Length: 293
Image (cartoon, rainbow, N blue to C red):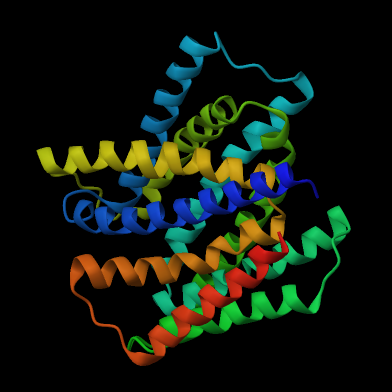
C-alpha cells in the first residue's frame, strides 16, 4: 500500500473512533431528553430533522441529489435498513437487559469478518480472529460486572439478533454507495427515508407518547442532531468508504466502553477493576485490528 493509502486509512480510523465518542456522548444527552420526551419520538425527530437539514444543504450546494437510476433503490434501502435497525433495537432493549443486548450486538464484528472473506476475499488471519474475540471478551467484562443480570424474553433476544444482522448488512451494502457517491447526498436520502419510515413505529413502541416542551430539551435535540446524527453519520460513512468491513464493524464493540467512560465522568457512576480490565482488552483488540489496516 502506498504512503498516501496508509495516511487515508489512518484518517479513516481516527474518524471512526471520533464517531464512537460522539455516539457515546449522545447517550448522555439522550438520558436527559428521555425525561421529557418518549424514546422513539426522540430518535425519529432527530432522523427527520437531520435529513431535512442535509437535504437543504445538498439542494443549495449541489443543486440536487445526483445518483444513477440503478442505485437510487439501493440508497433508499439503506434508509430502510437504518430504520429497521433502530426500531428492532428499541423493541429488543425494552424486552431484555442491557448486558444481554450488548453481548448479542458484540457479534457484529464476526459477521463483518465473514463478509470480508466472502465479498472481498480478505484472508481470515489469527490476528483478526484474536482481535475480534478479545473485543467480545472485553465487552463481556464491561457489561457483566455491573450487577445487572442477563435475561429477558425470547422475542427481545431475537429482535437484538436481527438488529445485529441489519447493522452488519448496512455496513456491507453501504460500502459501494459511499465509495461511489457524495456522502452528504447519500445521507440526505438515508436519513429522510429512515425518519419518515420510523414515524408509525413511534405509535407502536412509545407507550405512552409524551413530550414536555423545554428550552434545554430542544437545545440538546438540535445539538445532538447536528453532531451525533449529521456529523457522526457523515464521518461514519467516510470510514465505511475507506476501511475494511471488519474494521468498521469493530466500532460496535467500542461503544460500550465509551458509554461507560462518559457515564463515569459525567454521571458519577463507579468503575470496578474487571470493567477497567475489559476496557483495556477492547483497546488492545481494536489496536491489533487497526495495525492490520
